[in-house]
Amino acid sequence: MEERIFKDKVLRATKWSTVTQLVAKIIVPLTNMILARILVPEAFGVITTVTMIISFADMFTDAGFQKYLVQHEFKSRKEKYQSANVAFWTNMAISILLWIIIAIFNKQIAVMVGNPGLGIVIIVSCFQLPLTAFSSIQMALFTREFDFKTLFVVRVISIIIPFAITIPLAIIGLSYWSLIIGTITMQLFNALTLTIKSAWKPQFFYDIGILKEMLSFSIWSLVEAVSIWLTAWIDAFIIGYYLSEYYLGIYKTSTTMVNSLLALVTASTVPVLFSALSRLQGDQRKFQDMFFKFQKFISLFVFPMGAGVYIYSDIATKIMLGDQWGEASKVIGIWALMSSVMIVLGHYCSEVYRASGKPKLSFIAQLLHLVILVPTCILSAKFGFWPLVFARSLIRMQFVSVHLVIMQKIMRISIYNTLKNISPSVIATIIMVMAACLLREISHSMIWSIVSIILSGTVYLIALLLFKDIRDDIFKLVNKVVPKRFLKVRI
Image (tube, rainbow, N blue to C red; front, side):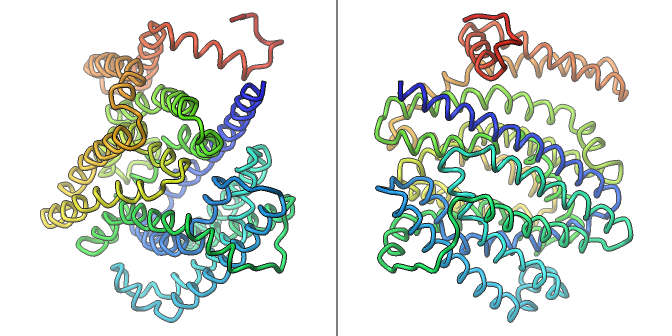
């Protein structure tokens, strides 16, 4: 009975998280699609530089306490809230200290990231640091309790705010300042609203003993976060240093749009999977079953999305960014294809490590990837932008192989069972790709391209339904998610 209640709780959390991310990943890319037609690539290059700095500082602001609050098993509510208070005040102190340091060395930082003259822009943008620190603990507590319904309301309202602010400011000519102001407004709303809605409120409580206990777990999460940041941003840093703002804008805007598209599926499941696995960490069988269910579900959507964007990258670029971003087509195509494999076979492995209380495994995986990634990016950048793009995309497969080995050797999740688990979606995607390639040969007009996309998607669905276990899973999911009064199907 308790197992069924837990599964229902996970399902409800996944539903609300999915709805949240669906709305977010529609509005945010829509905002970017509009802005891409107003702003030039150089403006997005500036924002990429600023985001790179803020994301680096944010790692130290959180210090891994969010994951600790979600993963740790507390003896009582009092103990949980005491830990939340210690995490909150530590986060705030670190964020303010980092903001001061960035303000003092703003010129040097701007030069280091390849954008001299952006000192003031960096200082203003980093006002986000204390704001994100203010709301991060509340978000962790809501996630721990699977309360994604509350997060849905807050998230949806917050993403509408920059949509209403950023675009008008861009139209009147504020360029990258429009993006900065919109983001700060969103973070301010999040901080205020989450604090009001949270049952826990910050109190003047601090305990060094609790801090030491949290750091014993969080230090590895922090080290892991630094390695993840390097993996995610080293390419942008190298492009900004060796090439130009124009290519940095083309590259990062393209990869961000692809990530946003794929995050329609992934972003809603990661927090739920982490919470669910954290509660099941003492039962290996249930732990593996939960992981495989999520992985199979994700592969059903991510593989065809990645392959589809690769084949129709020209259409995807026109829709997402407009005609002035023609050079982005190749970036979008190859990044989408490699990302689909990386997400299914690598991305979720990190959640397994963290939920098991072994974040150091994620750090080891990141480190083994970085020793190959960094020299690859530096060497390929010397040959130009496009060699860097393709080298950076293809090298992600080395990262996947590292994760698969760690999962089998340490987490006891075999490579064979992993590949078997996703085989239906792989086979159906290959069939879809062959159909799409044949359909594209008929005509390259926009109308036929849209028709061929629909036909390819239909072929994928038909191919997928040939697998009995997939059919059963789909019917069960529909019966649980859709109200029974709308269904006549009985399993």
